[in-house]
Length: 263
Image 1 (cartoon, rainbow, N blue to C red):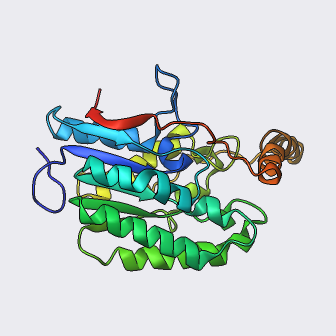
Image 2 (cartoon, rainbow, N blue to C red):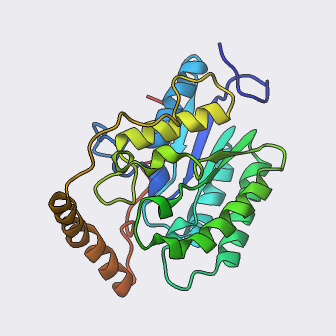
């Protein structure tokens, strides 16, 4: 049996906290209609490492801001008492005009402190770099880099590990992203899951940073058509939600609110 990097044996439980990234948006659908996602993939591997004696909860809900994650998920996750906890949040805040990066970092830091205090290992993330694949996203970089530096500092603390996705050039490939260009595709989720597992010290199953096989770039007309469909199907509804002050996660409950045996 393989063991986590802290040498204290396999994890017996995991609690995932966050937004659509952790909920698993745009991965394959499970029989119950929920998305699978990288966190479910990590739980599957850890359950195998633990010999089947493994419990898993996923409290993440799409569209949540870091303040909502803190208010709605963090204390619940702390009370569940998972040995392994994952926390990803703040990017939904960054996407909004006038983001207060300092306030985002303060909320993330408080959440991390609370979750780290009751777990064996807390996993945080450096997000992918959108500026290399999405036109106009460079304006987000100052806030993203500020958040990245803050997470790096948190990662220096005992019991916290940071998964580095920002420098991974494989995520520049549009095939690792869904049609909305904001959420990971099944292949993207597969690679994030492997990145998490390797960060925890488990043996590599594959090189998650490796580029996909090269394919010819789309022609100009095909790219234009794809951009127009994206604007109409995804960007327009996103703008309308911002105008109305609503979220894609309004009224949604977590897909795995209890720490139950992984099936």
